[in-house]
Amino acid sequence: MEATLKYWLFDPMVGKIVVSLLVILLVIIVVRLIQRALGRYVQNSDRRYRMRKMVTFFGYLLVVFLLTLVFSDKLSSLTVAFGVTGAGIAFALQEVIASVAGWVAMSFGSLYRIGDRIQLGGIKGDVIDIGVLRTTLMECGGWISGDLYNGRIVRVSNSFIFKEPVFNYSADFPFLWDEIIMPVRYGSDYTLARGIFQEVLEEVTGDYASRSKAIWSQMTEKYRIEDLKVEPVVTLITNDNWVEYTLRYVVDYKNRRTTKDMICERVLNRIEGNEGRIKLGSATFELTSLPKLDVRLSASSDNFFKENGKS
Image (cartoon, rainbow, N blue to C red; front, side, top):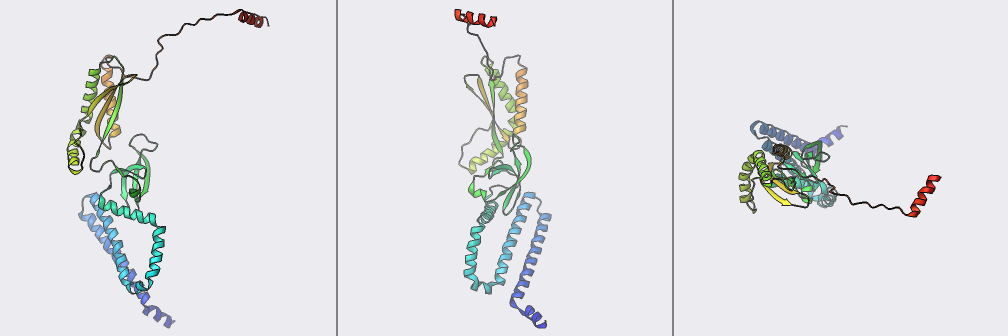
């Protein structure tokens, strides 16, 4: 028993394992202390969240580095075994490795951050957490019309940033262009209709246009894109059924549905107050005339009715 105890106490491998446990414990304590200090001194919640994630990541790297130093004398004899094993692990965990690489790309590439509304892996929603392997979204849409939350929390693998496009609704330009189609019957007052539509757009979306104009100017300096018009505009085309007005405007990506509701309500109220000078078009069908019917009975038809009448 005593010999066995001495063997375990003086065995180099046991010592290395004890040192490794102490190293891991020390790194965990240091990481926790740094995270608490960040929560105390960094006021911006988004920056604090990102810095905590980075501290955790570098803590992992530090543990791996220190464990490598502890077992450095044993690694040379296991190089071939580690190489074969590493290749197998890399093949089996390629999705995990891709997810970690995606997290690194997001951390340094600014693809999206907490609070952004994105579409990733076919899922649209607001980013509520970015992990090493997965991004957590509060999903929008689905069976809910518009850009409203449906209540589902979805975790999407970070590897999707290498497989599919990443749609960001709120990165450099947190506004969207939206349109409403208003059909107006032929014979209406077209000038009055255009004036009402333009006036309503400026009332509801004028603030969005003024705010987005400055941001769009920054976009033209950062990217090679043309300087588009962000003010609301009304355009007109004709078709076989009615005159079609298109109301185009810029809106905050979070207020798209409520803004469309306000525009439609005000437009309808203005049209109702113009004594029929503007009439909205609808898919109705009007019968203007009926063809004349000429019914003649032959002699054989008379005999048929007589026979049936007798029977």
